[in-house]
Image: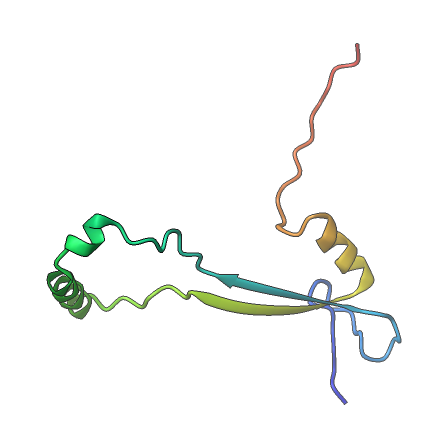
Length: 99
């Protein structure tokens, strides 16, 4: 039997018979423009490739991840909290004076 616990609070979701929620998130790099311009056609791409290859050989940098897939199991309480604030932003409170 597979053990499932809430990724928010750690509550055991396997045995308690409670309905639980699955949240799936995909994050990927969005490329802006794919249109060719006059400059693209006139550029010396062999020289650019040579420059890129020579700089990456010197620097041992890993490319940033361009795609990531995440999955979370949440209890009803944590799912409600997640849906109210999915990006976990701080909620600003305003202090209005009483007029």
